[in-house]
Length: 327
Ligand SMILES: [Zn+2]
Image (cartoon, helix red, strand yellow):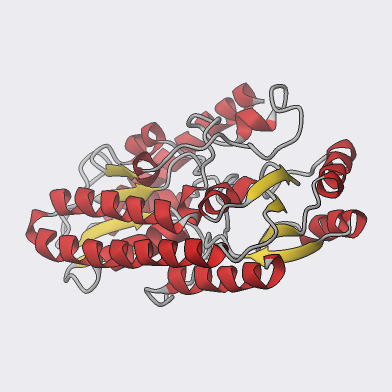
């Protein structure tokens, strides 16, 4: 499985490189250029892989003049486990100074991006985080599960959903802020102040959520995939099983039966279904297990015009949904 994807990856990379090279002169404001010599842009360009990285970077950059922050993936993409870079993405990467990724969850790696733009600064937010084992709540067959090798190009054993924890998100923000302050010394003062302010807000959010979670009377949950492991740990919840290993994987009937059995045996009160995951599967498990489904938002999507406190507002909504179901 992995080898087959490797081959197709190389084929599509060739197409991406061609498109990036042909795009660079069009992207250049002044003179001709190619992908190996990115245009000297008056504006600093920060590209973020997907929604949480985009929200974090916008808070860090704030109103800093002449810095553009863009989101690479489509706004509604959700968890980018299966997302392949498009020709349009390659063009944007060819023009960027910096790429901020979460790491582990994006399908593309640093080597691929460097072949599109050798000068790009790669910032990998998850390096600031704790490393939870992936699929901790999964019940069976992990060793021989081909999806294990499919989950991402980096260290597939590490759960790649750290941003869903406000506590880990704050660490990511501090790490990204440090990297951007070093990369753009002219903006370092503003970037450091914004970083401090936003990371402090996220730390306050984490504390608020942990405190509220002390009111939970039910602590065993099932999740639609392993997206909530870091958040669950913050809140003292145990994910006893996951319905699927990723948003795009169909679980087997045997696995679903095991999930139902685990839910019954362990008195699971709620199935945490990530928005964007298959709600019908969660409903089926809940109906058979005598449990209920609650929809939580992993903040893996956002609108380009979202308010800068989007992450915090959506996490507080998650908290209220959990308080209602688990108290
Ligand atoms: Zn995911």
